Length: 123
Image (tube, rainbow, N blue to C red; front, side, top):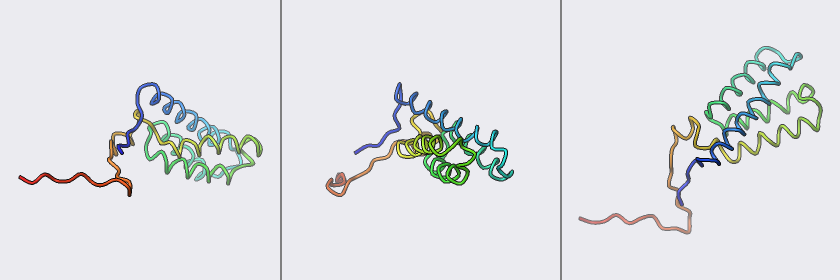
C-alpha cells in the first residue's frame, strides 16, 4: 500500500484544518490572560507549526494536552471539548500535501503483514 499526502481539493481542506487549529491555539495564546509566558510561547509555536504543516501530528497531540491544561481559558468545557476534537482529528489525518511534513517525509511504501515484499530481480 502506498501512503500519500492528499493534494488537490483534499489538500486544501487539510490546509484549512491546519489554519483552524492555528486559530484555536493562537487565539488561546493571545487571549489566555491567566497563562504564564512559557505556555503562551508554546501555544504560539504550535500555531506556527500548524500553519506551516511542520510535525503536525506531534503538534496536535501537544496542543490537545495544552488545551486540556488550560480548559478554563478555552471558553468553557463544551467549547474546549469541541476544540480538542478538531485538534485530535487533525492529528489523526495528518497535514496534507501542502505542508512541510509532505516535503520532509514524502511518499512512503508500507507493506502490511499480509502482503509480501517485492522480489528482487536477479541479473
